[in-house]
Image 1 (cartoon, one colour):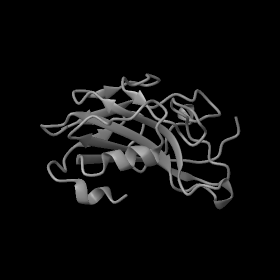
Image 2: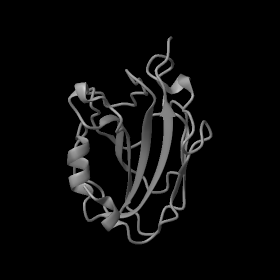
Image 3: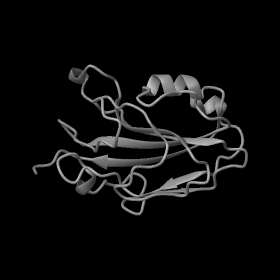
Image 4: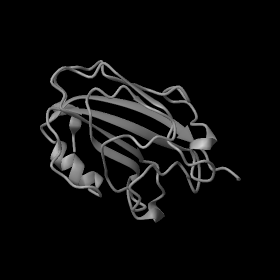
Length: 163
């Protein structure tokens, strides 16, 4: 899905974390082999007219042997548009989609081979998504098509660890 064509109104929406800066290493406590809790996230400058937010965390560096081109770690949609913070280890209020592993909650980084990039993508939407808990990334992207008014992204890196 080319979400860039749907972004129209506010290119200044921002997604940051107090735990790591964009492009930096995600602390190991957020990985599956450690505490496996979500990092804190701060949401700023959500545009007027936003009816809901959607958050997708995925890894495009998954090895070919995994059988998928992108590994989905976390999906939450129909988040209230006035949400400004997702605290560490907190299950954000919204509807949880299903990640690649089948989990409905956050599933931290655990790259099997080398350092991977993990993208936290936040979408401001002009509607609620008419989907149920457990919806897949594909279902959500299809439902968001034509409704994205802004997007923000935070990327962190994570390498294999020895717990």
